[in-house]
Picture (cartoon, rainbow, N blue to C red):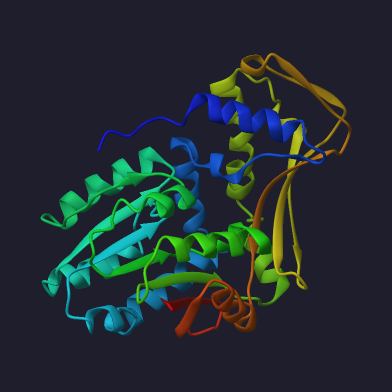
Length: 321
């Protein structure tokens, strides 16, 4: 696959719109350039960041049960993964399917071309002969175009609590796209981070080593590198907060002082007041009742909840009705 770079015009336009908004905001999808991808891989290994470990536990221990419904059809199927990343957890499913000589095709979808290239290379080494068709796209666009659709049953993976990166209404919109991008009987496996001790959640986004801080600040550094910005990264503090009622963990970059930031590609200067914030990311935590309501709102039926031993995380299998 020949990876294409992020569209310069789109990035510039999104930055311009976001920094002219009140309050200021930057899309979290731009965290993931080559540097951001590496930082997120470090985050997944942090002791405070339980999400990856807990979902890995679920997939490692329950992969046969998770796949039982799609395998019961006894037909070749498409395994489509939205936000594939490095494929660490998905390789559990892929190895099982390949080792058992199951007929299927794998379609990893990701916004980051560099991640897809690395994934394709690693799969060629680890699982030679696996049919892989990478798709560099957003969730919505990939579901709209359905490049994988060939009449076979589909199992769509939306792991890693990625749906939590959207507010309630946006999450419903994503589920609407899942409905449009699937046909009756197709299955979707979604990862949900569950509501739990608020301190446990907050620590996952504010680690002692400061990697999550560096990950968020890389967004400003990327603007400097690609758009000719002059952000002083030391003049911003990374500030996550968690609301146990809404289940929303929100990340902000807070300006420590009154300052002006120029971005050459936009031919524009942005005024920051002291302690003015840039909203960068949301990570919503769910209860099972909220998950059920979300499924029903989009025309899906919950087949089963697969949960880790501590009840921190759940991979939930839905069927399109």
